[in-house]
Image 1 (cartoon, helix red, strand yellow):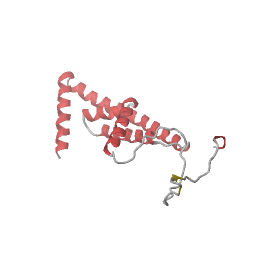
Image 2 (cartoon, rainbow, N blue to C red):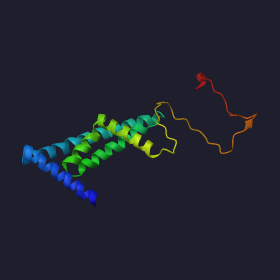
Image 3 (tube, rainbow, N blue to C red):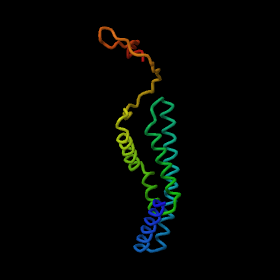
Image 4 (cartoon, rainbow, N blue to C red):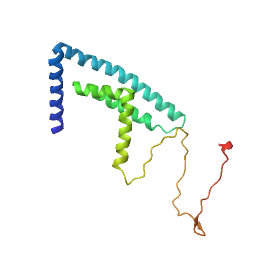
Length: 158
């Protein structure tokens, strides 16, 4: 409940401040123009994110940034539907690719900081995803050295 009250106070202060600077009519026009522009951007960026996700999946690549972009575009669209000047600005910022990339990097960094005990790694390779099987039995040891059983495949055969 305190968050809703804080949101209302921030939105009212922002609207009153903008209205006192540019006038009531222009403030309404800014809100309307921001919503229309935001909806057009949300549609365009949503289609781009969906196409990028489809392309990555058909190529067998890990689509982590494409998924994150899709979620951030959806969040930006939701923010545009919430009435208010501050939420419109936040939604528009999430729809712009440069600011969305900054938010994506910050989200990844925050997730890595929140789970310090877990082994986390950023996936940076754009190569194919290789299916594998995890074997639960302990590894065999010969003369104190770890022995890994497997087959070596030359690069030419890959």
